[in-house]
Length: 404
Image (cartoon, rainbow, N blue to C red; front, side, top):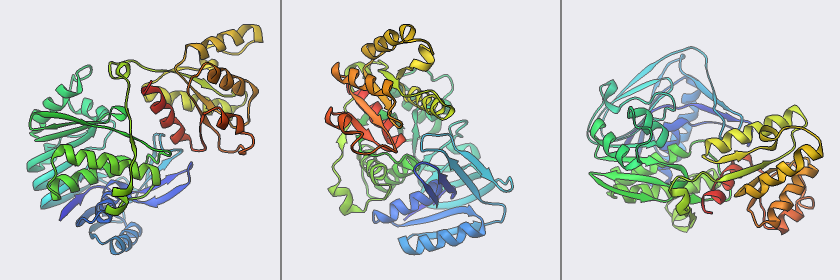
């Protein structure tokens, strides 16, 4: 039995459309139960959330132990899966769960904290601004594993910027008195520190990427494998990485049969990327209306946040006559490693840039939600990667870039 402590929240997303109640702890309970594990979920909820989670617990087969308060109730509003959510709550409240159990999966919470007393614990701080130490609220565990991303690791360990991840993991293990530290590093997969031994597990490519909740899924499957199934930390992280790829691909949770059938392709970053090279991406797309400018700006920020070096004609060349801008734009295409195309509207300049990039044998990801198969025929026939989902397009671009 794994006891899960953390938040249950409503999640709403505009693109793709999504409106459901999960949160880190709720999603982890479903993930563990679907995979055949036994779970007991502890969370702070309002009355409406309690009804939904009790029904889900009955359907999925996990135990639910709520602390009910009308002051609870948090909603995460996303424009898309890579966007920073707008977090809404009716009344500001801070809960403190008290959990004592042999095996605990604890998540950081937006609306409070969980004080854990466990024999074995997995802790995912889940805080992009100020993750707290596991023991900061009085939590204790004889055997502790940390699961966190590189940004959270840097925040949790002062003055760690610039240090290699191996040193960060070892220092965190000492600081947090943890036996295991798993640092998720995007395209580079995950680094696993296990009592002084360092190993890595790969990330996996998928056709589509549903990002919301992917970190919850990783932590849940790692906890089940390490706490309950007796796998090593490396084996548990490997299982978690594949299960997370399944979740991103399908927006669902694998059982053991589905997991065994799922054979994603491991991402293989190039040596130059591993050595710190930031691939250059040309951002092609129209920028003649406010909506188009918003889309270009959004894509530019997200690609930069993913570690790419972005050349944007609007930002780096600007507006002007053909004599002023065309040769500069084409030079940008020649200098890039990959091209990301915003295709809705079939802007003539964007289509020309796609053709020019493919003539130079540069990979192209073509993102368009509203264009017909007929209008995308040339892109399809010239081996562009085509998707109608924005987040999937960004990840496809990153994966293409890092393998070059």
